[in-house]
Image (cartoon, rainbow, N blue to C red; front, side, top):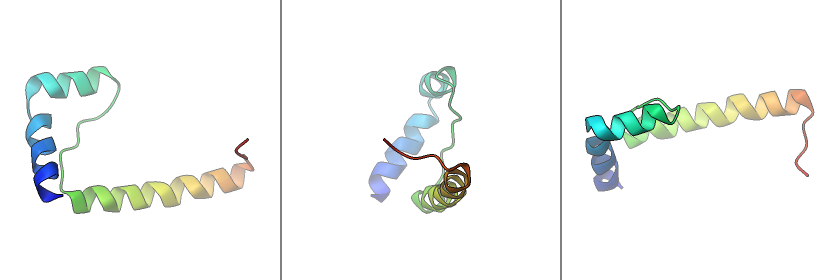
Length: 59
């Protein structure tokens, strides 16, 4: 897993790759897999609360 993360970080530091990411409307964030996992947990917590409050249901 660490090897894959390192390869992705190296790719994201390439100007051509970074441009593709930003042109697609995303933000380039090249951090550790631990930092990504922590951010993902925060996002899931935040959005699950928002969905519950909205009353949205999956069909």
